[in-house]
Image 1 (tube, rainbow, N blue to C red):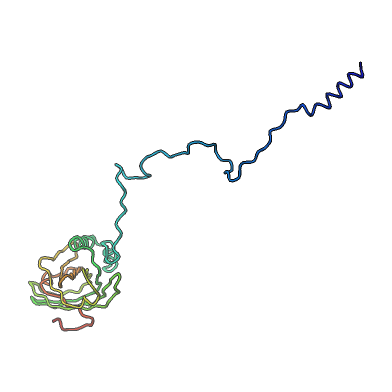
Image 2 (image 1 turned 45 degrees about the vertical axis):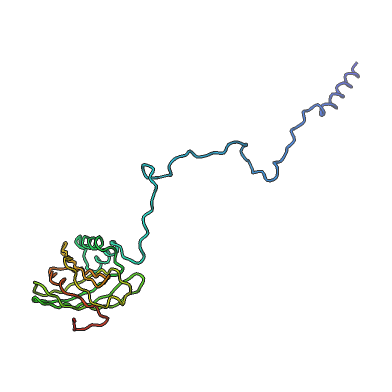
Length: 229
C-alpha cells in the first residue's frame, strides 16, 4: 500500500509542470504603429467659437495701414520739430496737425533759419537743408520780398513742409503765397506757398511772425544770393 502511494505521489509531481496554465504570448505592435497609440475612436476637436482676443461683436480684425515709405507722418514731423525748435510745444503739434489735415502728408521738409525785415515792403533770407525719404537731402537757400501792413525785423528758426515734390531739384523755383493760408497757434505761425502742384508750408516760431510775409514769394536757390528777384 505504501508503495502504491509513493508511486501516486511521484506521478503527480511528474505531471505538475504540465498542469500549470499557459502564459499569454507577447505580440509586438505591427510595424509602423505609433508607440502607446490611443485606441481608435473620434479625434478631439476644439469647440467652435470666435478667435482668441477677437473684437466684440464678431467684427473682423483689420491691421493698421502700412505707413507710406515716401511721406512723413504727423508723429515724425512733430518729433523732428520738437528736436529742432528745442521745445515741446502743444502749439507746434496743433499746427502740424492742421497742415496735415489740409494738405496731407508731405514728402519732404526743410529745417533752417532765416532773417527778415520790413517796412511795408520787406525782404527775407534763409538757409537750411531739405530732407526726403527716398531722394536724398539737399542744402537750400531762400530769399524773397514781401508786401503787407507790417514793420520790424525778426530772426527765427523755420520748418517748411514740402508737398508733391517730384524731385529734389524741383525745390529751386519761386513759390507764391496762397491767400488766406495764415494760421497762428501757440506761438507758432504757418503760411502756405505754391508753384503748380508743389506746396511749401513754412512754420515759424517766435513773436516776430508777420502776416504780410504770405503776400510775397520765396525763391529757393542752390547757392546763397542777395538778389531776391
